[in-house]
Image 1 (cartoon, rainbow, N blue to C red):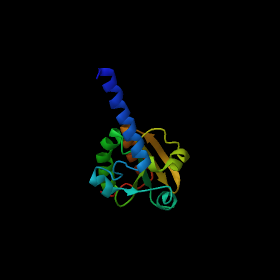
Image 2 (image 1 turned 120 degrees about the vertical axis):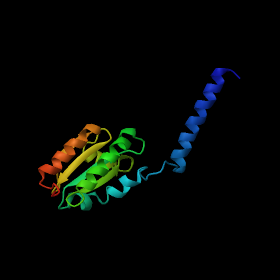
Image 3 (image 1 turned 90 degrees about the vertical axis):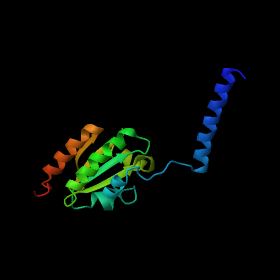
Length: 149
């Protein structure tokens, strides 16, 4: 076998496994890899978004993330720390972008991670990437929800 035929065979096997995973519904685990992140946040879907986020009286931080996203994984410890700091005054949620195309379109999520802070059903802050985390804290402080020392 020549190098070219080996390369084509490997490529064909990759395509075949990808197609089979789509057809048979095989997927990577949908659970966050970080158990602390899973415990500190509530999973939100298109079905419960209005109840959990928009109708909530407290500020709500929504993390639009993807299981495949390494930057999302880097952001998780910072979100866990914020969730602990604001546990009495804010709600922290996560939306898996692979399962919520309607929410992605509605809130114009163009990259992951995207962090959105809602207060009384309105967007107070929206930003993307690791650099959005300090602005989330500022948005929470601006809604007068800072935990008393």
